[in-house]
Image 1 (cartoon, rainbow, N blue to C red):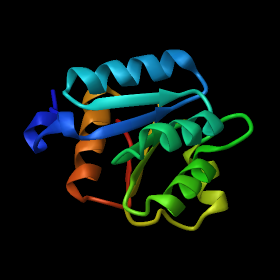
Image 2: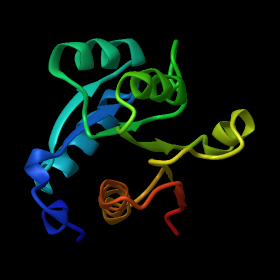
Image 3: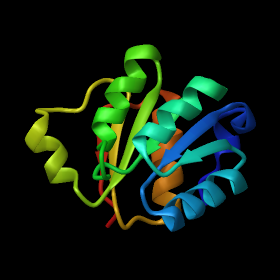
Amino acid sequence: MATGRASGNAAAVRILVVDDEPSVVEFVEKVLRIDGYTTMSATSGEAAIALCEQRGFPALLLTDLKMPRMDGDVLADRLRSREPGMKVLYLTGYAPQLFRRRRALTDGEAVLEKPCTIDALLAAVSLLLAGATSTSARDT
């Protein structure tokens, strides 16, 4: 299994997990915490913004793309306007929708399609945090 500790002090890396399905948030947070990352979470874009305003911005936003009221790419744009260095990993079953609205990912963004394995999730997080950017990962 990939490990966040291999890429440095994972506990010092804070990841914000946002998905409108609480069970997804709970699972992803558990995987990331076991691997040594510090997490915070929200089930909506609005709640994620409020959380960042209260607790500070994460190094990485891991978000679903399709959510009620505010999609993940809109959330990412809003948060990155205030924290430009924040990395973004879209964990989604709607990757084609993202590319209908945008021609390409920006620097520091990646897409991982649902469903994915734990190893694929941890590898994508590790690669983004290490500086591998603008990648699309497909778990096969």
